[in-house]
Length: 422
Image 1 (cartoon, rainbow, N blue to C red):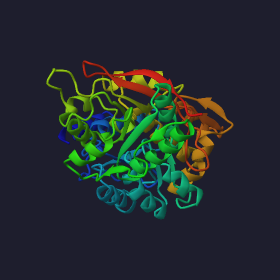
Image 2: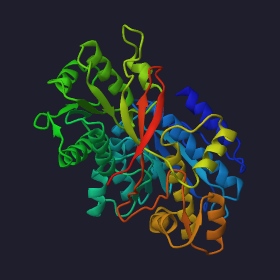
Image 3: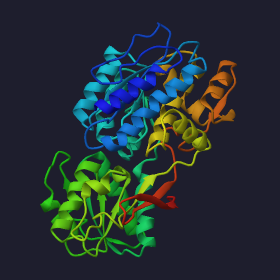
Image 4: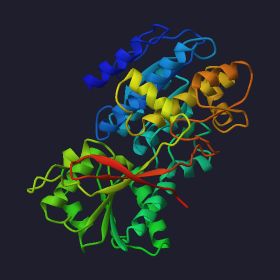
């Protein structure tokens, strides 16, 4: 945690406006001027998704730094308060309550885990704070949005698993897998993905061998022998694992140690797309990475602003942005652009103008500063993001492409293909 705190704090020191952000949950944030836009981030820098969340958490202050260097929003600097949700719904709910009630932010980038966003979104909606998730993919959010549960205070820059499930089913069919079993983390993400995959795979002629006895594990579990045995029973062609990095690595390691995974293809999803996971699963007696040959899907980034975002990241942070960093950048971008379009720094103002700046009839812009300048002149814009075109629909959803990734013998993850839901 200390490393990410330091990185975030150092990033904020360079903000042109000169204000200082305390980028840890205990630190809170500075008090902005009465009219200044104040936003928050609610992302996992510790816990089961920390290895991915830490990259996401850096994207938001990078956006704020960029915006403040070109004049801010509505004539004032933007202030950011960052909270670590610990990949835990209780911590996420507490963090969202703090951001809404104590820090009084107008919008929040978060969360990553669907279970945390589930805990946070009702608090956000109740307090009229716009919540934009860069990573929560559960289809449950679409269903609730259709019922009006969120009152317009919810959106996401990542497509729901109602798209990724069919995309992965297409990949499985393309690979010739006819009999697949599933094992998932028992929360909105895991169960929602499982449902979407099963429906799509069966429509394509496949069989889910454990459909009547699904394997779902407790997110707080630490041992997985029973779950691994059940998932790999009957030697299916492939096993679909819908996990988070820490627990998923333990389950795959357990399957290997019990001799269950030999000859069975392992398919994974976005929750496991972390450079650290092959090492966490470990190596076998032959010295090869146990995860070698694993394939999976992850929401890809193909936006018109992607190359510029990568270049900025290299200049400011070094290296390349990780998974979901583009989606986090775009979530923060939509918050500031919507506030400028509303000409007010409030949650209701942002919520009312999100779709206008994301999918409006105005001038296409890839540069956030250019978008802000056009909005200041009273012109309409259509923001084209780093992750994609972020055309947010009435339910707060976007449609995207998916990268197909695989783990090599050297333990490195490489994108090998793309797949889109039909």
